[in-house]
Structure formats: C-alpha cells, structure tokens
Image (tube, rainbow, N blue to C red; front, side, top):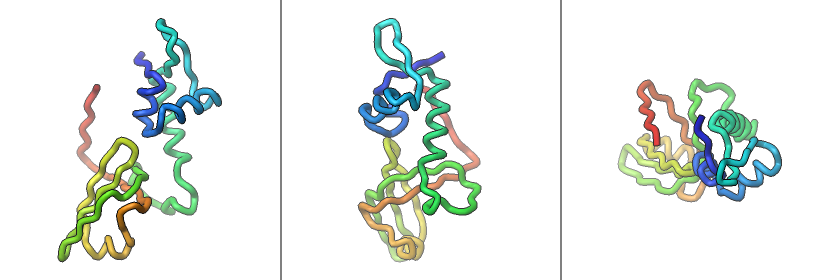
Length: 132
C-alpha cells in the first residue's frame, strides 16, 4: 500500500505541512514511521481522512439545502473577466485552479469579485484520473 509523507499529504489536502503535522499530532489522522524514520500516513487512512475533512468543511448555513453535485471546491476568486453576455471566473481552491464560463448576469447576481470566497461545484459525466 502506498504511504505519504506529511508534506505529500498536505499537498494533496490543500493545506500547509504545519497544518497536516498538527492534525497528525492531535490524532486526527494516524501516522507511523517508515524505514527512514519519517512519519508517513497510509494511503487508505489519508483517503478516509480526506473524505471526513471534506464532509466537515462546509458550515451548515453556507451549504446548499439540496444538490446532486458532490464535487465541491471552496476557494478564493482570483479573476473575473466580463464580456457583453458571458463571463469567465477563476477560483483557486488549494492546489486546484478552476475556471468557469457562465453568464454575465449570473456573475452580477452572485456579486463575484476578485478576493471573495466562493465554491466551485463540478458535475461531470466524463472524469479522467491520472496517477502520479
């Protein structure tokens, strides 16, 4: 089974290594020592923790009441490009940069502007997965 160092786990979770280390120190995610003496997290434990983290990440009042979209990427708006009818919005969510094309009207109704928090929700019937 694959194991991840604290730094690798932090990158995958979209947090700093210090945050991942504090979570491990607090017992939120199990670690062990590898042959080199480094603290590592087993892949299955990291996967379970990432799901737990994602479920607890949204405040009740911020979460939509009902949605079929399961892939939520909370982040910060880094760019808004408005056209006459369409708009392009970029969100940086941890290590992920998401770009959405939507109507100008939707951007204006949501009040989207650079620097504000927003969540990109992705629903797709075609998802590609690569390994490292």
